[in-house]
Length: 301
Ligand code: PSU
Ligand code: MN
Image (tube, rainbow, N blue to C red):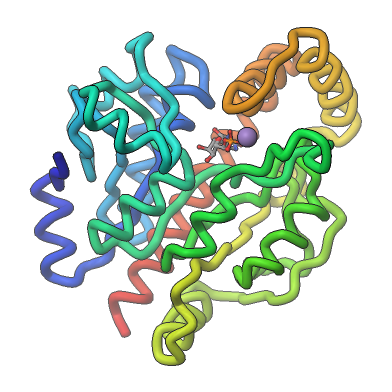
């Protein structure tokens, strides 16, 4: 029920750098027709950074750590790919389904496979109105008990960003800005919230992980927040307009639970005529490159 792609297995066994990649972004976060090409580009960026990519998914109830081309084809085109968080893995394996892994489940499976660095687009977080709905992404709780370094572009502004940062503090998950003092806002380079720490190089990020290992405080993961350059972000005005309409649409359509994030992403992609997609792809590629570099720095030490 747990299979490593041969290239990934060899690299893990030899202590060479490997970067885990999630598959929910491919199956549910990016539009059909673009997702398959982007999957290859993400993996190539990890290689450019100096590491072996391992995209993670569940196929016919088997956990796959590293996918081949046919498996990526299926994940990017099939209509029966279930969005799987950690709690879904047991049932999904038992019932033999095809599923895509979120940040939470990818982190857990990467750690189980001996992979310590993971690249994604945005983290799940505390949703607006969570005081009423209790909608807090499982991503946060899982990172708090899984020793992986997650490279992301912050969280989308559809979430409660200050609330998400408070929650990560409560969970003792360090949030580190990559060449920034501010937490990125996914489509936007700056969410307006400060980060407590900042590093300038992949080597410094790797040194953080090493220090935590030596101290024994690495029972939790690390969030490395990597903003897009300002000239690549979504136009803030377009962003604010699209967000307001999107929140209204979720309300009108009665969308809740795990459908919220994919529905909102879809709204952004159509309402901005692909501009948010361009930004989304740019930031994922940037995160994949940085994760490759951090994994390489960690393996070199
Ligand atoms: N954020 C994005 N794009 C995504 C996701 C998050 O900008 O595709 C996906 C990730 O897989 C993340 C999941 O783990 O959504 C969070 O879903 P939820 O909010 O239902 O926990
Ligand atoms: Mn949720």
